[in-house]
Image (cartoon, rainbow, N blue to C red):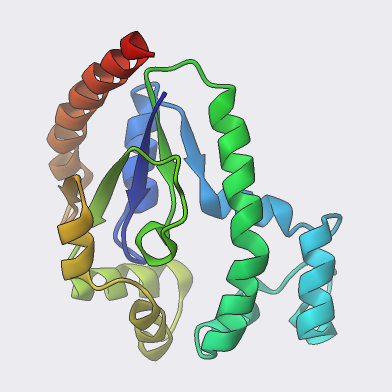
Length: 203
């Protein structure tokens, strides 16, 4: 099937765009959701993370303190690379397994670091959700109650906005409202249905 890799910087609106595609009946796979599933307390990745970072990385209920972990890895490139090396192969394998079971003309695979790690060989087309950096910072501050310096530290680990735009096959501009997104979603949905059906007929 046709696999659309949806990506964009933190706070660009990836989840909002993915949900709008889902409302059209399009299957959506989210790398962040899979990451949460494979780092649950009963999973092997959880044990590896606790062994590496120590018990201080846990909440009182024994789950991962994701805020603390995020602060560590985005201020320490070596630790971030260690975690990516642990999780990315597992995320990729789970995505491929889910895709193999699908029968729709196309699906959306939400991968925040698609352009930073570049090993998702099953992606056929890249869709970038683009937003001004000021809007990204404002949204994340409201959503996650993070400080601006912490958000800026994350932005520095991600591909620049200009790079994402150059590498994209398609771009959705998310500057203001959901109403602004809908015509862009509708247009791309029709395009992807056409391309997905053409791909199926060739195989």
